[in-house]
Length: 332
Image 1 (cartoon, rainbow, N blue to C red):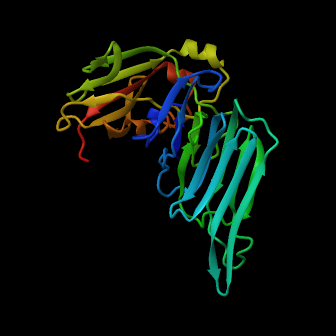
Image 2 (tube, rainbow, N blue to C red; image 1 turned 90 degrees about the horizontal axis):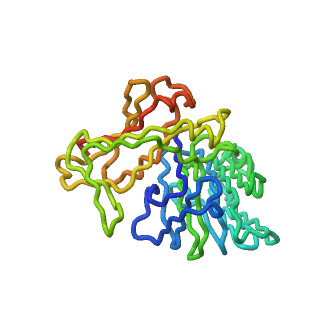
Image 3 (spheres, helix red, strand yellow; image 1 turned 120 degrees about the vertical axis):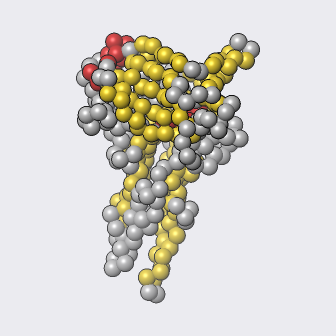
């Protein structure tokens, strides 16, 4: 199982260099998380879906101002699904290159739109499900059990079922962009298993952060990064469980947790080149991943279960949990 979660911070995207991005804190544009980002220019593969992934579910909030676009492609880019949200409605198009079956050749091109909606200046919930499957050679018109489904505010607006989709190739997220408009994206969840309609990203309140061996780098009175040159230096965070209960109550289901880490650097990459992500529950510590210190946005991949118990997270788990980022040296 794989899951990526992002409240709406472009710094947690896997690819955002050299593009025009903007983060804002605004409860209107990001009603569930309070933070959202805009991507003005076309962006290529902002979130890296792991190789071998043929089933993908996406759920995100989009504040539509003029227009926004989300594009999925197959690994060979021969197939795509494009969702456009515009101020007066939506448009979903799919294209699949034809394949030969003896003397027959089949291709699918679909285009659905609705122009009688008022989306401009509103935050909507966009959900996309893609199941990539090969054509059934014995019955190519019926295909296989592939699927494309798009929901807007939890209502189905586009659906292909029991057909060949993407020819069984890996599914990739090609684009999330507002195309030079000022639409904003937040509450982003992508997984290889179904994302529930009520599942949302929540920024956890912290009771304390302990910083050991890191130097604050300031510019014009503003903290711009933490810098370190030693192995084993840590940033430790604990969740304020009482504030969390006040925010969401006690009857919630925790589907995953993850750590946000940006603005970390080193002057000595020969000594320190990695950040290890660890979870410490009840005094038991488990490593859940290592990434390059210059690539900490990869920490946005979620921790699906309590690594100590291998069970779903509970509020009681979080109350006794430390989330740790520790510098390390690894062979790349």
